[in-house]
Length: 356
Ligand SMILES: Nc1ncnc2c1ncn2[C@@H]1O[C@H](COP(=O)(O)OP(=O)(O)OP(=O)(O)O)[C@@H](O)[C@H]1O
Figure 1: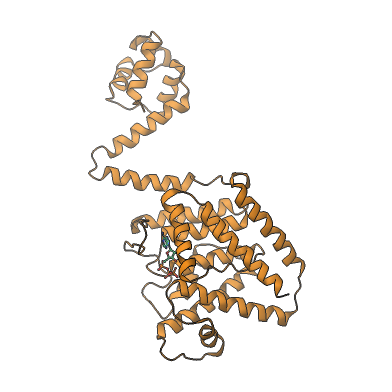
Figure 2 (figure 1 turned 180 degrees about the horizontal axis):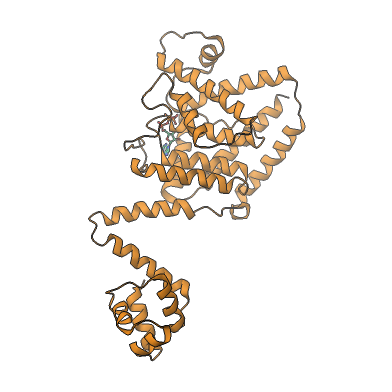
């Protein structure tokens, strides 16, 4: 890209104008115009507008060169200029990258899956109201399965049956650590909180996220439960490096802003997948990011009338989940993750329908 100085000089010469003539045409002092052309001074935005008009250059084009020059001037003496630029770039991508994603932007494969899901959802909703005992039993079944699988992703070794005994019967399982017991109990409590929110006017917001995280780490990590991290983190085995802690405040602000702007635009399944992926990619907590993000996804899904999407914790499924996250983070390809979440939503609706 040409510098602003070069654009000015070349366009003035191509227009057959002297510096004085150009200065007269745009009402700017000739000495100042010379400084702009030499790169010794940067015009104001208004001066860029006047120069663009006098030289018949589209203002938007010239403004881009002007903004790039401003960024350059800001960073030219910085030792870590490239690193700062790449951090700023990821912020900008995050802000504008997918903001306008709408149904028509999705691939035919994702759209077809969403169409199937919405047929199933309509069938599920047509079953309402379900018998209360039946509903309670179903919830008990799916909540335990969800706690089991989500904690299994995290490395918890309780079996499905043991998870049931710990959560529903209050039984201690021999040979399993206190932490594993607490993880099961905490996750079940966090689902309960999600359930309350589903029936409540309160929408997903920063306080809800911190509360969910607090419930996940309650009694396990008092120092970090319900708090954003203030240390850098790495995700084991992943090429994705979560942002430095000093960026978290702004990133989380953007995260919730994104939710507010997209919640009435995006398809709910895509919205839920995105809020999940963005949260684990930012990785705002020292621990418990995956479990919290999966709960956020399920809060959004259930608020829109879908059933709990359960990502499985067996080795192959876990690898598929991590690969799908990396595809978004490293290659900016969210499709695989949308399909993964979409398939989990579809399976969940099918299982719920089979049980009615
Ligand atoms: N590229 C990636 N590869 C693997 N995991 C990733 C990646 N990006 C984000 N993650 C997320 O990081 C989570 C692990 O982070 P963390 O240990 O803080 O969460 P957790 O809730 O304690 O554990 P888990 O999510 O494994 O249950 C993964 O579950 C996944 O959701």
